[in-house]
Length: 242
Image (cartoon, rainbow, N blue to C red; front, side):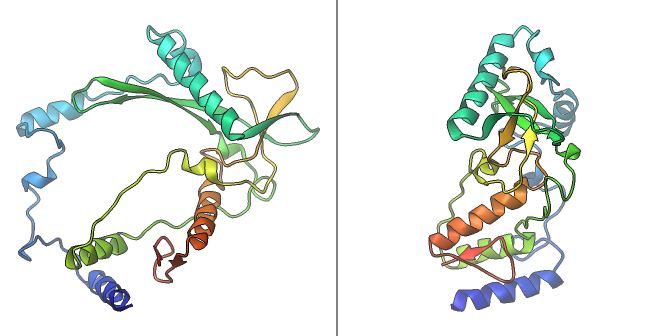
């Protein structure tokens, strides 16, 4: 457990040290090339400014607007694929709307993923809830979920360098959809998802933008890590060790 003592020492030191240092322990200038806004080339400052000014999104702001565009076929396919994924994962059940129940709205978030050369890579569609319509004490309670501290992240990287360890990075797709909801949340069907009149979607899993979505996902992750033999450290509840 010696490396845990090293981690604690580094965290204490980083609270006192507020400046950046490079591998030679010298301050890094703000105009250092490593801070260039582009990672695929090194344009001059004027070109960098032009990139920022011309990088305007052309993503549709609603489902209806997407369906009247020249690329409506691609958006329709992306939306149908997302609905199919929800159905496969059992994210919701179609039920008769209970009398007097609170029904939250839903919305499509549509965006085009571009590659480093500016070419279109993928049309992405997400279904989110209008979480601002949820009522505390009715369809959600606690919402807090921790995130890793920057000082902890830097300390882990430092230990990895000192111990010559390999660092792996991964991304969990649709992370929130792994969190099981305890509250009964009813959501309106988003455009493009046809359901009988008078019916609503009862959510089984946390959909993005639900008030408790982040907390539910975190608690589910904690349970999974515990089953794998990992223990959460007290200094940072987003770090697990084995």
